[in-house]
Image 1 (cartoon, rainbow, N blue to C red):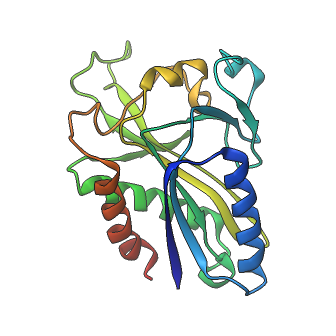
Image 2 (image 1 turned 180 degrees about the vertical axis):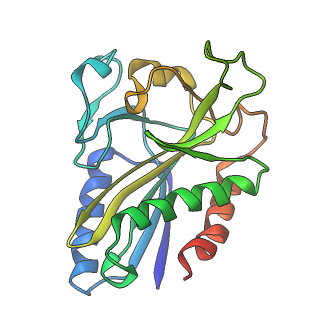
Length: 216
């Protein structure tokens, strides 16, 4: 059984990490159910295990937290749905690549409920949307913007950290970093795409599509 937890308001990053670490340990010990935690953070930057110091463009803009998840720099803030995923891969198959693909498929399925087509791109972590409304790149390719980031950590084959999906964050806040180390593409949100979607709408889509992808 997977417990769904939704926290209103803004949750501090260190508080969230402490909860995830404790819950992941309890899951690994067989003392707690798996959990999906839906929340929002105050404005902050996190540095994953591959973060490069030069990608932190404005180190004094928001608090910066060292994170032991995979990936580079990410922004979290109000209007962004953070989905912390505490799942037991001991019983779901110890296949990290497949698990990340399932997370990607989950995001894409949830976005599809709003007629948004998400894409996975080789060498670019996260979920991307094409922007035919924007000028093409110099090489003629269609411009794409990132709508969701993925970064996980495993301990005893239990996952924590997870996904962030942009509903209506302040997109200028991403300018203080090079998001995930990628400079040629931008960042978007559901509202930036012209969709009147609120956090509750996305939560419903996430819960519905989770069962489709993970089979619970």
